Amino acid sequence: MLIDTHAHLDEDAFRGDLVPTLLRAREAGLVAVVTIGTTAASSRTAIELSEQYPEVYAAVGVHPNYAASASEADWRTIEELAAHPKVVGIGETGLDRYWDHTPIEVQVDWFRRHLELSRTTGKPFIVHCREAEPDVLAELDRAAEQGPLRGVMHSFCGSEDAARRCLAHGLWLSFAGMLTYKRSEALRRIAAWVPADRLLVETDAPYLAPAEHRGKRNEPAYVRFTARRLAEVRGATPAEIGEQTTANARELFRLPAAPLSA
Ligand code: NI
Image (cartoon, helix red, strand yellow):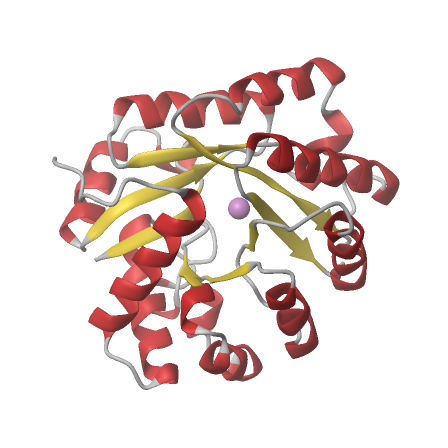
C-alpha cells in the first residue's frame, strides 16, 4: 500500500495517457495520489482530475517560480478553490533561489499567503525549498509564532539541521526519487533516523524519476522505488514502509481511511 503525496498530473507529460498511468499506479499498490497545483489554472485542473478519479486528491497554490506572473485575481481563485472537498493541501509554495524566476520578496509574500491560508482552512501546506533553506526556516519560525504548523517539506533534500528544525515545528518530511540516487548518501543518512510517524513518500512526477528510471518521465507507480530504498536505509520491509507512510499521508491530508474502490 502506497500514497504518492506529490505529483503533477496536470502536466503535458501525462496528456493522453493519464488513465493507463493511474492504472499502473493502482497495480503498484497505490491507494491515492495527491496532484499539486502550481498556478491558479493548474490548481483548477488538479481539482478537475480529483473529481474525475476517486483516488486523486488535489492541492491548490502558486509555485514560487510562478508567483511573479500571478495576479491578485489568481490569489482569490486559490482561496476559493481551497474550500473544495477534494482539496487536501495548500501549495505548492515555498522559496526558490536556484531558478530565481521571481524576486525573493515576492516569493516571501506568496509563501506567507499560503501559510496563512493553510491556517484558516486547516489544510496542510506543501513546501518547495530550493537553495533557500535559511529563508524557508526563518519563515516557518515566523509562522510558528502564530500557532502550530501543519505541513510537509516536499522532496526533502535539506541538511540534518533543517530536518530537525522542521520536525520540531511538527512538519512531515517527504522523500522523492532523489533518495535512490547514488550521490544521495547524506540524504539517506537523514532518512534513516526521521521518526517513523513523520515520513512520507512522493514522486514529484513527471520530474525526478528514481534511479531505476532516471532521465525518463516519472509517474506515481515509481514511488515504490523510493519506498523500497527507504525501507533499506531504515532496516524495515517495503510493506512496513508502505503501511507507515500511507497512514502518515492519511493523517496529514485527512484522507478517508478506507481503501477506495476502483
Ligand atoms: Ni512539485
